[in-house]
Length: 115
Length: 115
Image (cartoon, rainbow over all chains, first blue to last red; front, side, top):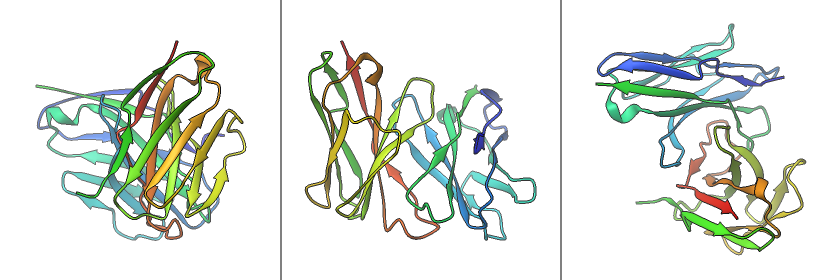
């Protein structure tokens, strides 16, 4: 079974608008971490934001925020005020329980920001 | 700036000809990882080092080996590359690997072509 599901293969947004990228996860562990990475066409994976399973508040980092709904097992990324440079692949990833060294990635969402 | 560096950025090798990819880090992190990412797919963990302790993923082919001579450097050796090994190879590091908030930071990747 998929542990991380990203149901949107591609998303389009206009510059300056907000966009939400969906991520749902599956785990039976109480302790886990959720990450979002951005991968431009150059290939580098850029860390964006982290949410711990015990964090009560949604994580925010500049224009990025994570809409964490634990009961629904979702961790959607919200990008506010989109910029052309936001066009990239976005991966949601999870680290479970004691397997601190292992990240499991979703299949990614390609975001295209248009002028 | 502290960073993860991968060399070369592009590598072309011939079918069956051994190749070595290099990763170095100035973050002084304990853990180093190697991921394989094929076109339009999510990264897949091959193995990781926690200090000098090597941890292989169960489904990593024997054709892939790794060395970590010191804290800063880690190498990926592909003993007999096949056409199916053409991919982006990503190196990542993390601090301790024992904290739930331990983020993995990635290098720019090496894109391997097998002729």
